[in-house]
Amino acid sequence: MATGLLILCVGKATKSVEEYTGKDKTYTGTIKLGEGTPSQDADEPVSEHEPWEHVTDDALREGALKLTGDIEQIPPMYSAIKIGGKRLYKAAREGKEIERKPRSVTIHEFDVHRDAEDPQSVHFSTHVSKGTYVRTLAYDLCKSLGTTGHLTALRRTRIGSEFHIDDAWSI
Image (cartoon, one colour):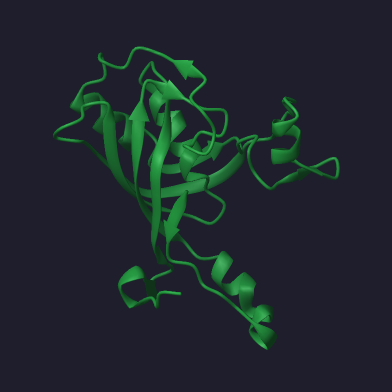
């Protein structure tokens, strides 16, 4: 579901992968208010419906602002993190819920605006630290506003300050 900038390292360059994964990232995307999925994105079918019409544009902006800065984030079940030697997404697909510890991440910027034609869709851009789950950031925003939601689009546009989607090659 995610698109955008990806740095590929081959051969001897694979030794430098950590250099890139440790950098801040910038994303754009779209959140669908009122519809939740187990994966917090459109890769799984909608399994939860909650009212969303009460969410105002001001509340969206205030909610995003409250999630800006240093925050604690609980990794989603649909992630590659290993707990007890097993990847969380495998447990999630088996219908199991594993306790996860919060992680500290930094949200440098989180800007949101409602779609002009579809008020249930919220477009965003965010600049985040290494280890941030953007779909969880979107989900946490929705929950803080008294509803649920999931990502319907996600695009990485920047890695660090030197790598931008406009300079990328297409494969």
